[in-house]
Length: 305
Image (cartoon, rainbow, N blue to C red; front, side, top):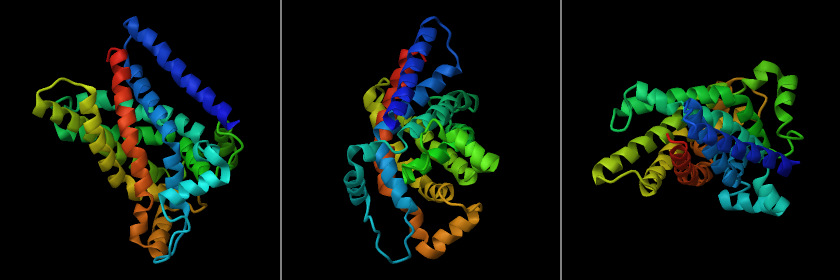
């Protein structure tokens, strides 16, 4: 069922890109094109890097007192354990469909609205860094709100692959069992993380790319996309790590208060635990940037944007 669901979602993504490409060729260019380019690129990158997301989440949900050793002892052992328990299927499939669905909603908004908002704030091309940062924060905030229910489902699947019978049926189950309050669980740290990571991700990529182009005097090309992607992945991972840890704990627990979850983490596990999972997070966000931004640039170019 997981493989079939993932195939259905992947087919929908491919079909959407093809359809909008036809519209673009006919001269009908709207903000939808930017949203589709961003959502599709993010969905592809997230699907390819899902093992890193699983590893990061499993490390984050492990409660560990200060000074005690991890039962999984880092990324490699976590991945090895996952493979031993269920082979490649267990490394890739948990949360795969939910992750792509979440990116098609949140990723579309975060990246699709960024450029028009950036241009409104005067941050285009060689414009102000503040304009780029403000646009990334706002578009990330809106994307985080829209995708929060799917974020909950994704995190629960990553933490426990059998949390729901299926990804496509998880949203109705979440609404039925937990109502609006359940759909808004963890929305504070989740939306804040989405805004902050978008600033560290999109704004830093945008600024780095245009700075490199200005220094070199060259034209926009894949090599500048790659160099800017490397910088954005490192910045985004670091600034979002504590919020990512807090979001994961809230969405997989029954506690309602973000402050109680945060204080419990610090008291029992120490402040450094807020950065737990940083390495797999970078192994995901770093390659995610390298995959996502060049794909997004290519799709935008193909759509005439």
